[in-house]
Length: 26
Image 1 (spheres, rainbow, N blue to C red):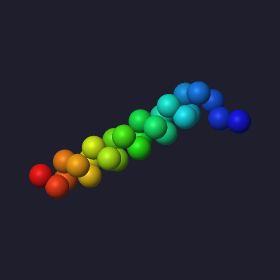
Image 2 (image 1 turned 180 degrees about the vertical axis):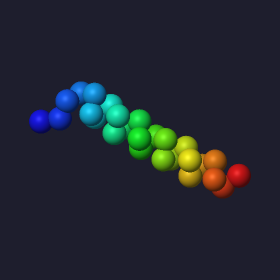
Image 3 (image 1 turned 90 degrees about the vertical axis):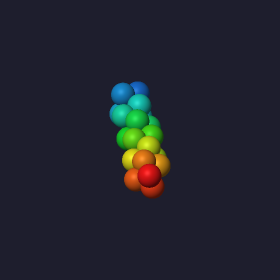
């Protein structure tokens, strides 16, 4: 079972990846 922090970090990582892609188009 995953700890809550692990899930949170994973979600944060996903969001950061999406943001990076978004800004790389600029």
